[in-house]
Image (cartoon, rainbow, N blue to C red; front, side, top):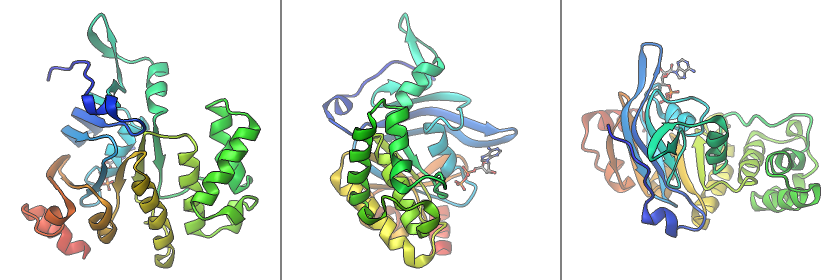
Length: 269
Ligand code: ADP
């Protein structure tokens, strides 16, 4: 595979959201090849839902984009900038950590388990990264935190600690915390899977709001097929380390072509 520094016109013209481009991405854990020469392009502002059987590598796609797992081969670009490579005299070389951190600062990720600091209030949890990572003053971070808690419907919970919140509320705080870093790309890894069924809707509503604002590119791994059908621009069916089917939700979920997609959708319904 040849690699080159590239920037698409769409990336440049987009104000907030950034595109993601994976080329030939391979990732193995020991003998287990999880991503196999994967090519994936997500346009700025696009909302992509990734579906597929458990263990097929969906989370690994998100974790390698977030640099929580490193790739073995290939390239990933975010907003036209290489994540794992730097251009030296026109040639791509493995990037230094400083470069990786800088490009990664455009990406936010929300997990199945919220990982909030239990001894801090909801507001303090949100203020942390803007102050420590982005150098915002306490006052600025506080104003931003209050605004974001309001946005996720938790204005009343600023001074509550995670222990005083329901699972759905904790997940909404975690989403607000991620938004505080003004990501251009947001990755959501089964963010409703750990919630009691009656709490799923409130989190999906927040995702819907973020999607409607259109300021970030969204990649979501979810089993909420109704939600995918309603809000995704594109659904990717993932199996065997590769995308086996991709298209608008009405096509992939409504009339899947691939036998494995049919079998998977039959099982999750
Ligand atoms: P999915 O999200 O589709 O359920 P994952 O991306 O979580 O799949 O996992 C894909 C495969 O990679 C699984 O076989 C899993 O056991 C393996 N895997 C994931 N993370 C690790 C890790 N840190 N170490 C070893 N194997 C892993």
